[in-house]
Length: 147
Length: 82
Image 1 (tube, each protein chain N blue to C red):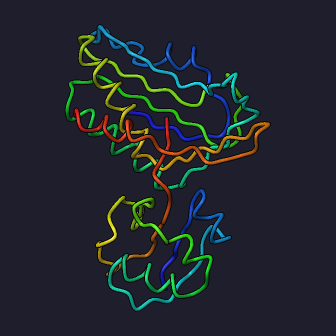
Image 2 (cartoon, rainbow over the protein chains, first blue to last red; image 1 turned 180 degrees about the vertical axis):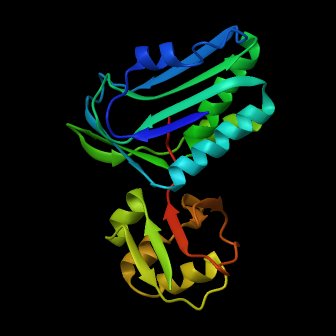
């Protein structure tokens, strides 16, 4: 398991290539990448991500540990950025490796669902219309119920 | 003494990211009651607890949680990671 919380960009290609490299028993690698999304109706200049140093790493570790307990995973990677980001920039990624794809897919979805509403990150959007904190969506909280 | 931390709009409303608080409270809710009586900006930040989340010693918990032995309490809005 590897958990990374950092301000600087990460190299998605290099991370995916290195992830679970040399593990010939793992037939499935699933990755998800979150990207700062622009909205033509409400142009975004930048997104500022605040987090809770210390708790963030613990919360992500807890979520990844729970995923490993639920699915037979060979490896798990979570990278999440904070600070100022611009439209099109990669915010975060998760990767899961398992013997079979179903476990890798499900575990990746579980990681995403939980880190949306259980990892201490907060997003503020700044654009021509001003700035404001992104409100949590009830759909994100509801998504946890299926697990 | 306990370290109290604020994040996102809670930090903005209260006007500082962290402070040390001398408290007699035995639960998080008791601490919130003490803070509310301090000044208007605290009363405003804590006016609707359903829009707030709390962590004690970096573990997500609820407002009934005991404060015995706690070193750090953090208040923040629902999280928006990912």
